Structures are given as structure tokens and as C-alpha cells.
Image: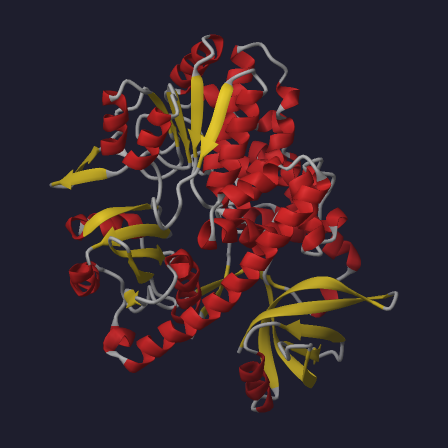
Length: 570
């Protein structure tokens, strides 16, 4: 059962409304997102690229820029090594485009998820050596590759790391000793000695900051690379970064650019997936474009996704976009099968009693373990690790809940892993098969999660009667976009609503349509997209219900009407 609560932030909402020419409702919503100071409100409502921080504030950025400037001048061979997900692919593209625009001799390599695994490895370095590469730049990886970078340095290579993952550490008596890789420069805002003001950048954003700093240092026009912000936006949303601070500006501006993108590959993917180009939103990146780009690295090679971004001819772009969409359709089927297996295993075994779920699905394709973990987390609201059989043991992905720092908890039993890394809410790991059950027991023994922590909390912005809804308010809510993690869609609530004429509709019978009526007799259309049959059964037993919702305009046959989309009910 969820626990609903209304945010009770205090502020002079009428004063904020008057100052920024917005409604008191919008003022309250902005305050609910912890945007407090005038400068923060200005940036939140009307932030521009001029409000972004100077990348040179990052530790080692000056060293990275100096190294690359000299390598370009000396015509040294540079290789960008990215990662196989949406962030890594876009970061690779950004560095490749940016460096080649400065006349660098640059090429790219992306590891194969199954053959190479995550991040930099000895095989990739050997491949670079065989190809006569002088300098490697990592993006969206490298921070945990101490041994591999040591090996590359021993071979005489220059190595620059750009990453955004947490820095690995050893902890003794509560004191952390951070394990920095021995690269020539390490640019990562999570470095404990990095004073960069915003820590929440994705790998592609860090790569963009490097390219921008390099262009300035070489006195080149930064306007030549500004189009790459659309790739930063795709990576930021696709890698599920918080849409606050600099990320909000990157995504807002990137979406504007995407609506008129000149990138043939992105144009083809937008067309192929049926997205309305003029109304493309963060939702479309997260749930349509992003999964297609990720499917390449999951089921084939991420080099296909990079080839799509590099496509120069419309015909080639259309072919590659179609292939990525087909791969994603296959991934969807495999995911549904994996989720069913995981649920059956949890329900039929003692797993259901664990606070941290460790589900071993040996036959599952390792590339979809993270997606399945995310779906299981949504269903049970617990931290979840999904493990699969791999060539050299067992691999897996974890997805967490708000009160569980996954990377820190894994660090407490690091001796069980052959490799691991990640963030608070997501992680990847490798271990020997004989350690699977040991890991399950130990991670549960170590946890301090309480029953209260395992109750999902529904944070409601405010109780809002239906009479307050209008087209004008809905248009005003667009000022809060883009929505996503860290900047959720406004969530309103109303109680004592009568449900009228509920019916299940849609080609797949996955939409519940009905009307709601308040105590004054005001009626409004409503729609629900969750477990529609369970909701329908619940409605049959209740005369009046409470809903959380967000409002929208429904356009049908030229007619516009207000409706609410129900998110939770009770």
C-alpha cells in the first residue's frame, strides 16, 4: 500500500506569482521542486545556455585540454572509447564530431556488451596499440579502470578519462580512500577534489564540456558545436539523470533543436517511430528514441547506433533507423518473458521475504537484466538485482529505491565481485556463480532497510479541486517542462469523487476511461493507464474515491476538452 502525502513547502506564493507573472499555483509547484532563491527561480523558468557553468571549473579539465591541443597540433592518432548505452554512444559521437572539427586524427571504438563487458579493458587497449593509436579518451567509462589504464600507460599511451560515475573507494574504519585511475587527466565531477558546482551531469554532458573548453582554448567558434546539445539532451534523459540545474537547460534547449534537427539519423529515427517532430518531448526520448538507441548495444553492437548518428545520406539513415526499431521490438518481447520468469521465481520461493531482491535468471539475455530489474522494482518497491549467466561467470544489473544507496551497499561486500560500479539508484556487477547465493544472503544481512522504507511514498504537490482546472492553467504548466526524474510532472489530488461509466478501451484493452464528478456536480473526463482491470474491480466496490492526477487537453475530432490522467487511486 502506498503512503500519500502532500508537500507542505512554505513561501510567499502570491509574492513569487506577482514577481514572475505566474499564478500562485505555479509558484507553489516551483517551490515544491526545491527552487527557492530568486536566481534559482530565474534559471528554472527562463534558463539559457549562458547560465551553464564553465567546464574549466572541473578538476583536470585544463590538463585534458592542454593534452588534446598538443595532440591535435602534432597530428597524433586519437581514439575515443565510449560505452554501449545511450549515454556512451552520444558521448562518443560528441567527442568524435568535436575533435574532428578541430582537424584531429580521431576514430572511435565501443566495447561489445557480451564479449568485452562494460568500459575500458585490456583487449580494447591492445586493439588500439595494434592500430597505432597514440591517445585514448574514454567517455561514460574509465573511472573504475585502474588496472587497464596502468597497462595502457606501461605501453606508452596517453590516456584521458572523462566519466560521470562514482569514484571507487576502499573504506577502513569509516575513512574512504578513493581509487583514482592513473590516467594523464581524469575529468569527472564526482571526484572528491572537483569543485564543479553541478555534480549531476551525464557522460555526454562531460564530453560536451571538454569539447567546448577545447574550442575556446584553440580560439575556435563554439557555435560550430552547439548542435551537439541535442545529443546531450538525448543522453541526459536516456541515462535517467535528474532534470534540474544544468541538465534542465541542456534538455530544454536540446529538445528545441531536436524539433528541427539536421542530423539525418535522428530525423530518420523520429520518422520511423512515428513521433510528432514538432511536439517531441522528454517522454519521447525516454520511452521511444532512447530504447531504440539502447537496443543496438543490448542485442547487437552499439556501433550501429553510432553509425545512425554519423549517417550522412537519408537512405542509409532510414535503413539503420528501421534496424534499430526492429531490434527494440525484439527486446520488448524478451523483456516481458524475463519479467514473467522473475515474478514467478519471487512468488514461488523464499525470495519474496527478502528486503533486497537478488533474482538469478541464467537463461536471460544479460543485456536486458537492468530493464527487468527496473520493472521488478516498480512492482515490489524494493532494491532489485537481476543476474544472468555469462561467458566468464555471472553478470547482472541492479535498480534501487530512494532510501537505498546501491553503490555504497555493494561496496560493503565488494570481495564477492570480480567487477562492479554504478550510482545510488543503479549498478552493474560481475561475480562467480558460486557467489550468487552468498551475495543474496550477505546483501540482505547488511541492509538497514526498514518496513517503512519499503512503502512507496507518493508525493503530491497539492490538493486541487476540479473547478480550478482550465486550459490556461495547463498551458502555464508547460513552463515547468521538461519533465522526468528530478522534475516530475505536477501531481494533484482530489477526494470524494464519484466514478461514472468506467469502461476498458483500446486495441490492447489497456486504457480505462471514465468520468469523475465532485460534490458540486462538476463532471470531467478521466483516463487511467495502469493495471486497468484491478482498478475497474476496485471502482465497482466504491461509491466515492480519491485520485492523484495531472490535467491535460484531450483533442478528438476537432473538439478540445479538459481531462485528468489518473496516476494513483484509493
